[in-house]
Image (cartoon, rainbow, N blue to C red):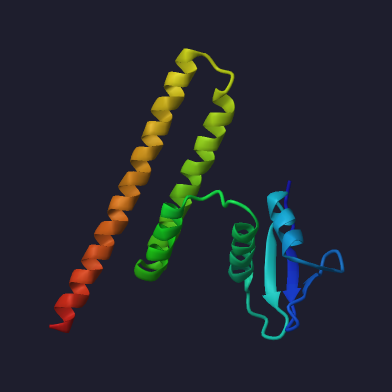
Length: 157
């Protein structure tokens, strides 16, 4: 099934307009679309700039205000560190891997609730492998940060 991208225009008065359904919406409506698997693109009506990332970030911030957020504080700290220190490519690679691990863990947990001991052992091994992959990605990201810091230090001397 091909999914159509819903284009939303954001006006200066902070209103969001769903161009596909011809109606004004709010951040909660955008979040519901995304949770239903609808691809959303948000465009600044005045400049034409793609501001989808900004709107997605606002949705996350609003969720944090209203209830306990699903991501642990340590992961959020790592995201802040990574966004300030690492290249855009390494951050994207890291978070894609983290997202896959999270999704796989969630799927394994959901499947594993009613499974037998042998299946649980296989899932535990799979989870350990996923944890190892995340740790490897974190180690590589940390090495890149240290290398960049050393490079900046040697250039300033």
